[in-house]
Length: 78
Image (cartoon, rainbow, N blue to C red; front, top):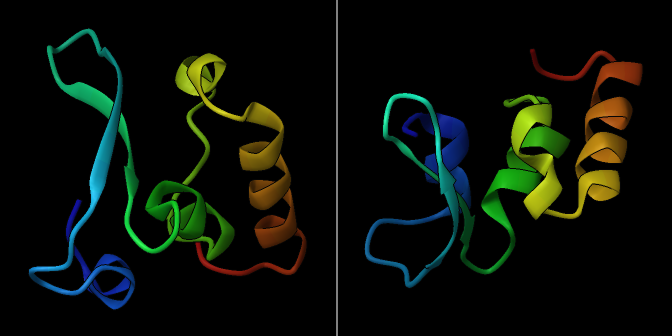
């Protein structure tokens, strides 16, 4: 995860917590990044990311899907 949207939400050196959930098929860690806010959710809300349904069972799925819907409804972001 890197880019202007993420950098605007989490400044370099700021504390954060990883809520580890699982690994994907390629051995990558699936986690939520929590700084001052839930960064995963904020990026979905901002239209900079999609809610990956395969892994929503370990998160607040409704919150992520609602955020994605709101972003798409106003054609915000991707």
